[in-house]
Image: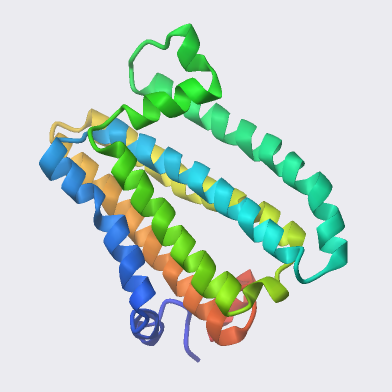
Length: 229
């Protein structure tokens, strides 16, 4: 029986040009390290800003469910403000932690959400371009998969709303642990490359999940992933 992490699924995943586009964007921070001399703090700030992008995309996906169901459309009136507040506070607390981890003092203006975003955008040279690349690839996937291929018709409003939380916890526990390791290592370049590798591996898994969902016609459950396609 084929398993989720079998070579055939990897090959099928990367027959799709969009999977290569995602991989290319995930590898872009290597340029930031080489060209701009980024360390661990700008990398973690970039991945925090990526969470904000994911939040925006989640709202767009939630809105998409409203075109498939009047019930979902009614639910949007409550759930979008709720998600914006709840996920926003989740990211805000995470951002405060990252800012304190950077070892730099925080001004009173830097304690508010807008101040945190400004700090993150200014933490590394060229940061805005890398965030723009992340936003662009997410928009491409949204239009290609969610809209043009009709995923919104089978999407559940509640499922879309809670989807980013597992992602943010899984990815950023690994990223933060890697950041502490990077900061504490005597080889800073090796440490930041480890952070990028962690993110690239996560991106490969996400692309495989995307392929799995396309082949099975629905979201991959834990049982389905354990059994294989």
